[in-house]
Length: 209
Length: 209
DNA sequence: CCGGACTATCTACATTGATAGATAGTGAGC
DNA sequence: GCTCACTATCTATCAATGTAGATAGTCCGG
Image 1 (cartoon, each protein chain N blue to C red):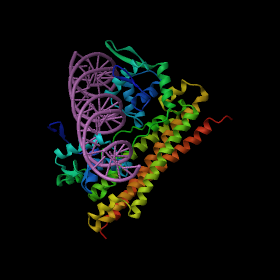
Image 2 (image 1 turned 90 degrees about the vertical axis):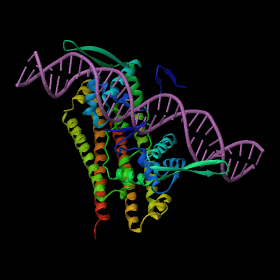
Image 3 (image 1 turned 135 degrees about the vertical axis):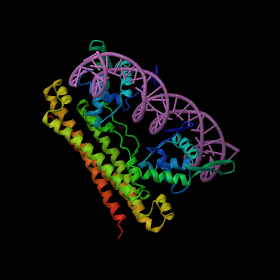
Image 4 (image 1 turned 45 degrees about the horizontal axis):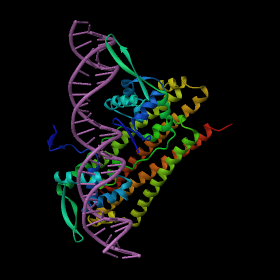
């Protein structure tokens, strides 16, 4: 029963980029490049997308009425397009926020490989586990830094967001951000602990004694 | 410097379905349907793919020399194709196992939503957290069941695998499987704990006092 | 005023994944 | 003998993602 308009489907909220973009644009109007930069840095530790996905998606969102693009001059001859969320966009974001996520099937290369680690040379096996640790340690630092920013009032996006809402709402807004990053930190710590047990296991299994 | 053959690229091992299929086929020859069924049940709790992806991939793997398909009769008029891993396939799998994974960027809808939970109605927020718990509780049970199977010697795939290798190797093979599922179990427990803290936080923030 | 880093946007294409449905044979039970 | 659940395979399409590179303007410093 989907209604097809051009190549756009009128569908129920799935996941995706679209809502990540809406989330950022609830704070303030931005250009595609601004959004891309956010995905590269701060927000990028939760969601990421290349610019080649962002620009077309913004155009689609505009034609769906969720955003309004406005050309602003940039230097003497340059220009850029700044997107502002519309009332409809806010409505769509809120609707998505009020809808339960659909959880998709597991697909986890790290654990898939771990299950067959006896096929790897001991050194390679160790290296996998080490890579896992390195990866999650980096995430751990970035997420810990986010918490520090939140607590220290040093997050520009969060501050902008707070300045746009009623003071009674500040507590919730901050609490949920903190809660999110705490969860990610705990996850990273778990992954590191797991890989460390992996290293110990490898040593045990391949000990020469 | 990739060499293009047809529409197949000779590339360095990335991730994907291909190695999940090879992993299963190291145990014994199977048809596409068998593999699909495994992805639907047991292995499906680590990796999943629809049949529409499996059949073409098997054909590609055969033309890449990793597998050998053999038509076997099935009933009076039916037939099916059973794929057996080739020496080259084993080599490719081992090579992949000896290569470090590339970790891709974070993309986590559940945590993305959590960060903006103040946009949801309290009831919807609670429902999200509840869905998170339900999802990971189901995973938890499936993975716990896998451990039970491993410990009880009741895993058909594992038993077949063990019967095909030297007894000295049994310990490693079992240990890495167990290690993998233990990690997944710990992760599920962490996700449940996180969502439970979420529920508590929501109650706190939206209490009427 | 020139080079280089950065801002800004776009196109093309490959790959992967998800959904839907078509086709056809098997084997068990009524 | 018929129906039905299951086995077996395939095609088409679409959404999402990833990679590469093209184009063009800005702004800063030497």
